[in-house]
Image (cartoon, rainbow, N blue to C red; front, top):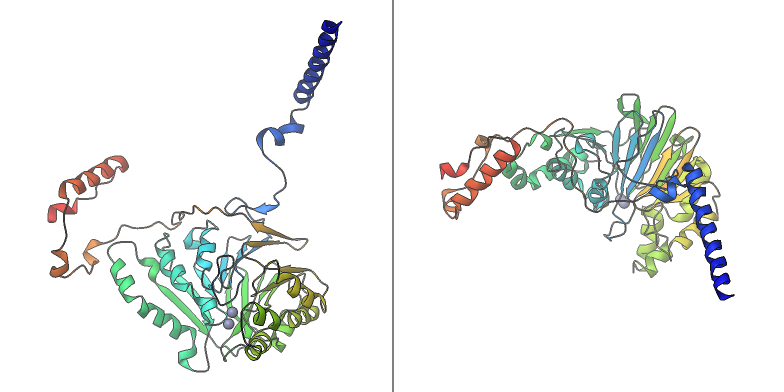
Length: 412
Ligand SMILES: [Zn+2]
Ligand SMILES: [Zn+2]
């Protein structure tokens, strides 16, 4: 009797196993996803793996935080990529260059930077884009568009010239060691007072500027129009009449939304007077942001420039929602928007931390060693030369890569 039950049980198990196997083999497509891990929907964005459609715009938040540094949010930077292949950076705040590297874009394509104003949280990683870009194989010169100021010393040109002076030791020391063509910077400084005038018009892309009201004269905001899509970016500003007028019909409108005075007191440890002044007069507070968006009614409103945490987000959202009920993104670093005339999707990028630079698309040239400034005899004579070891390194590399780089040890 017991034997019979056992056989019966085995028979049932065998039948179940066969039916599972036959189900799989009868319907191979049905189970491809479970067998190989391939899924149809991309709920996240993996940089370097998605082509844009010819009519599509992608915007990536590479810095959404405050003027003070924190691991979770870099300072202001947004990347705009278009279906025609063009890419534009807007502001390059402290910490944002690291986020930019995670996009895996060849640096020759990251040669166009637009600056809204000259606060460190909007230009603090300019050296990392400029020289860091060079050592990441950018050969193309860096092109920078930025506003003038009320005086020459408050303008973009002055800032860039002095940044170049600051890095004199750095840049002179690279000449003759690497391809330094990418050190060239072209600055287009435009009148900060100009209203909705074109600052860039190439390849079907039109970028306009108009004044912003922030800290000093010389802050501006931008719109970018291409292929019937309109993108707006405030940089930093108090709510103002130009933004209200010239960002109407925006598909994606990115406006600063600073931490509210209460957050600035409780979390940032500002005294109430400073919190109220900075939070509502120098910047736009969340409720003011809500009013701005309720007026211009974009297809998608994007709030940035606050620390977006589990305890601050509800407060910021409550303030915004008290006056604005339209589409809204509370930006955080690596948020990605894909925009077409029909659809806007919001996702998060999933990044690879083990980033290496891409190849130059223009091609790097070997450095001309004769241009090297070199060392004084006093320093040079301090070298300890492992002549035989170096000879072997040069030989091995030349053999493996088919190169013919002469061993400099022969000159020693
Ligand atoms: Zn600012
Ligand atoms: Zn700022």
